[in-house]
Length: 161
Image (tube, rainbow, N blue to C red; front, side):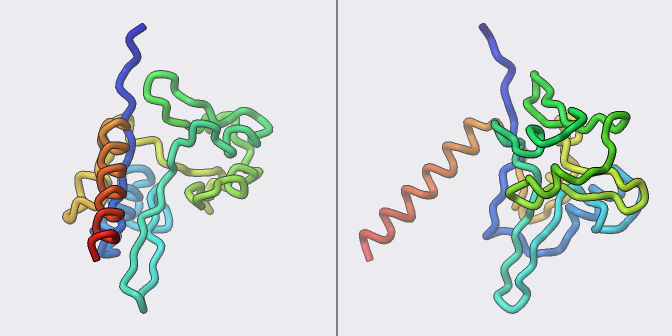
């Protein structure tokens, strides 16, 4: 059985400068508004520490948002493994927003329905506009390999100091 390659949005927190180009581009593409509150990717900001953390749907394998939806409005695309919103079903109850462990589900204040990252159907705009490459769209296996290597390097560095 030949499965399609699964891609993920990989985040490098050390490279994020908090510029919010990703959120503004996402908002413009998805809502036709230049308002970071409507971006499917958000940037958590700790200004005093100079720390900026992009927050986006992780497309969890056992997604709490998908499990709690009372009307089955969150549906995983079997090919891409991306959880998408069926807006005809969504009743805006916000149970998924509360269930998301990452805070990546948002509510559109105009429609009162949820908004979340859908990877722009395999061509995420946030990746294209991120000048520091803090956001990448890579095969899941490559993202895991890079994380393992970075983690291993941190262990080696701590041993040698």
